[in-house]
Length: 202
Image 1 (tube, one colour):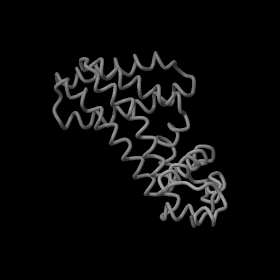
Image 2 (cartoon, helix red, strand yellow):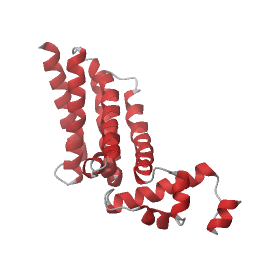
Image 3 (tube, one colour):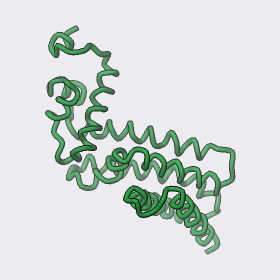
Image 4 (spheres, one colour):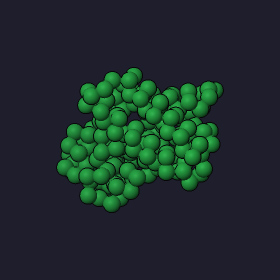
């Protein structure tokens, strides 16, 4: 195959090659940050040429970062959405969501950094927009259990956006060793349940 001949490396199917490139990019972005990471470094990590990297990701670094984010969001939401689908009442499903979110962030601090910290300092509007999209996705998912408290829809939209920001800030504190994960799950859940109760009665 032309790719194998040109690269002198292992032949891969296109989807397998793209997954390999995303994995290399994930490591480089996590180690160096988006702004300090170049395509040459990613190509070296993946043991391919920059030409091949551009073949699969023609828009370069922003497209590759977005593809990495897609993978990470898929990993994160696999856990949080499973928690939301559990046959429990709203507060227990909410606790499950918070627990799944914090567990993912604690187990994969590199993923937390790429999802919730790197976009804002990237200086790239495409990357910033991708960061906003991640927050919106989580807000939409969180709206389910919070809607059960009976708040008006406009109030729910504001609360879910704030709740995700709060959850990210708490994850930061847990990763910094300022509080334990189990404690954080309880604090966030109690805060959200109490807060939703208050706004629903207002």
